Length: 313
Image 1 (cartoon, helix red, strand yellow):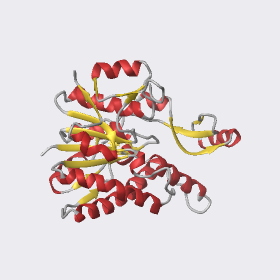
Image 2 (cartoon, helix red, strand yellow):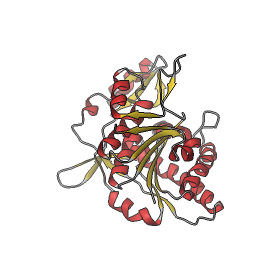
Image 3 (cartoon, helix red, strand yellow):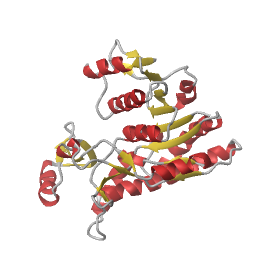
Image 4 (cartoon, one colour):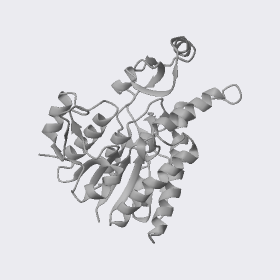
């Protein structure tokens, strides 16, 4: 039975047409889990990794808005909170979707810490925007009072920026492996809670966001998965996106990926990390599969009928 690690994009948790509420998210997650249940019932063993971009931003905003009443939570704690409530929604929805298919299988969430390097260059140049937009005056005040790094974001205002370091090791990996055969595990939510390992073996949370696609790739390697499947809004990766000569790709070799990245074909923070994570998995596992496709086409992509597959050569 093939083992899959599935990375869920933001559209699998919230849609553009849904309210940014807990109930709105749950409605979208229920639809998402119908597709995941189909994959599970098609004979695949799977684990799930999800993003948390808008959710952790709202948790942070709520915490900072209420700081006069209760102390604001640090960013790593906000990330842990997002893992809990997104995982809870997936657990609830997927368990129900499986039960409708007469499959009684546990679904659970592991609050996952992911080790990053203290000297990762990303900490010197924070680029990941989080939270709400601010005016220039508000941004200056936050930089002065809290030491935040604030950056102008596409003409829409100023936002706090945090580092996006490379994930190096999953702290709870042994537990995830132990649980694999007896449950569907949701782990590394939001890329995992970023921590550094101290000399005495303790862990310390840091203000950062790990890309969930890279976290899913790391998990896929460490559980010896056969397939890394990255689910997003589009059915296939494309070059010349949005242009008259747009070309959807059925397959990309590693060398073609390098060529297209050099041409700037894939947007940073969007398709680029997905392609790079898939490349990393195939470099380490030339005979395995890395697929990028949309949630509704996942089964067809596993059957080789659609999606974009990254190959070694």
